[in-house]
Length: 187
Ligand code: URA
Image (cartoon, rainbow, N blue to C red; front, side):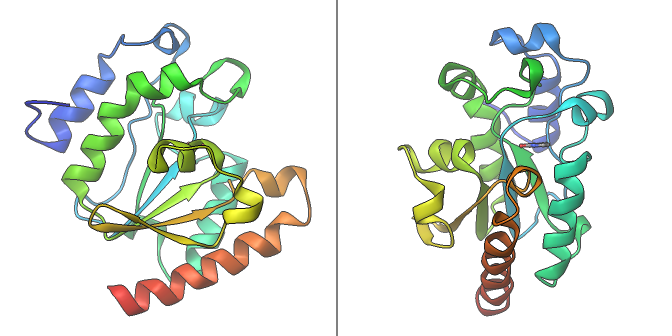
């Protein structure tokens, strides 16, 4: 987003945003949260019911799992930045459409620019697709590291995938263990 000087200014723009139809159904804009100089940034898909009500990312069931995984990787939730591909809740918790992700891209790009994390974690296919700029099969490509400009991108499952398929949790835990090792090595 051109001409935006600070993260607070970017947040203010997002809170007034009407760039895509998702703004019509929102209760709160869920911009993201975390230290403005966090070394690790997690990127989810978009706000769900609880997030839309509270204006904070990952505060529902998937959020509980994410917090546990972050702690298992040896970090505290308060020390990482948490954002989403889209800042407004898609109706019925459907995945954001490519046009909606595109309309919202300036906010995520701005967050990456201002927070400048060393490691970015894409939580699920929608985030990985947005960040890598191509389709991705998370089942095949999770746990891998990709260059993302000056950063490293780790692709993993969306934490909500654990709520639907029992086999996913061990895979997510394994990816977060690698993240914990990487954080120790890189940071
Ligand atoms: N799922 C997401 O992708 N993001 C949230 O903030 C909450 C649930």
